[in-house]
Picture 1: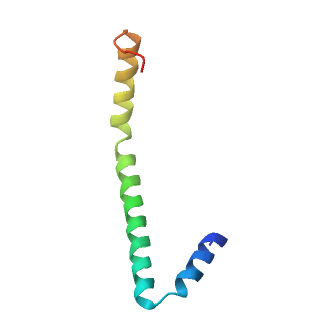
Picture 2 (picture 1 turned 90 degrees about the vertical axis):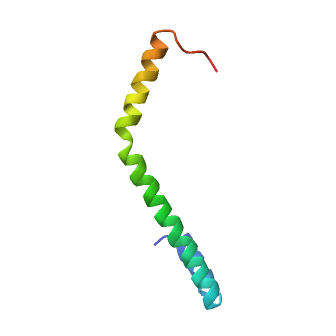
Picture 3 (picture 1 turned 45 degrees about the horizontal axis):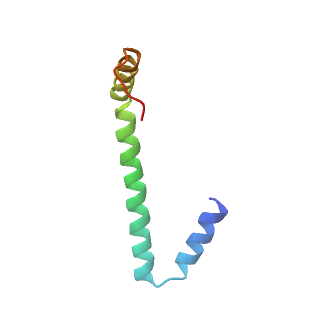
Length: 67
């Protein structure tokens, strides 16, 4: 465990039980959200590669404009 996380958890441990539970719920939801994002991103790699190839082909064909 990192020192920063230890410090944060030490601070949370000083809170009343209800506030500790609220902080735990926030942390667990954030971790679950990050896991869902990572899974979704990992599953989309083939599609992203195809879209990148298409974009490069359009650029090579002169069908793109500078931003």
